[in-house]
Amino acid sequence: MIRIGFCCLALISAAPAQAFNCLFDTECYEAEGCAASNFDIDVSTEDKTLSAAFGDLTILAIKRSESLVTLFATGGGAEYMLSATPEAARLSVQMNQGPLVLSYLGICEGAF
Image (cartoon, rainbow, N blue to C red; front, side):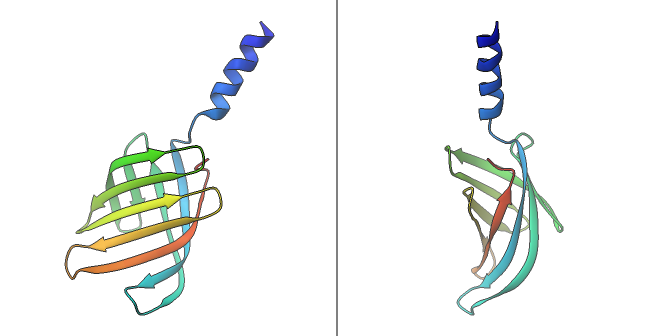
């Protein structure tokens, strides 16, 4: 009976996070350099949404390994790619008009 309990506990703790928050403290605009930022997003892999202050985006694909989460989202006239490890996160925003790219550097808490 104890073995079954440990087995179930291991499965629960190994389950990937279904919701987590990312905070980006650096924003880079095209090739003009980077500046301090206070941009954050909430990710729900269950609902397939990426939420920011400007609204919700639709997650199109999620790729996950033990130490990396990569997701692709769309909405608001742009395409988004988020890559997160336990140590760092990068968000690339490709604006459809322009073209124009914004890159964000930060961390995602609770993703692993």
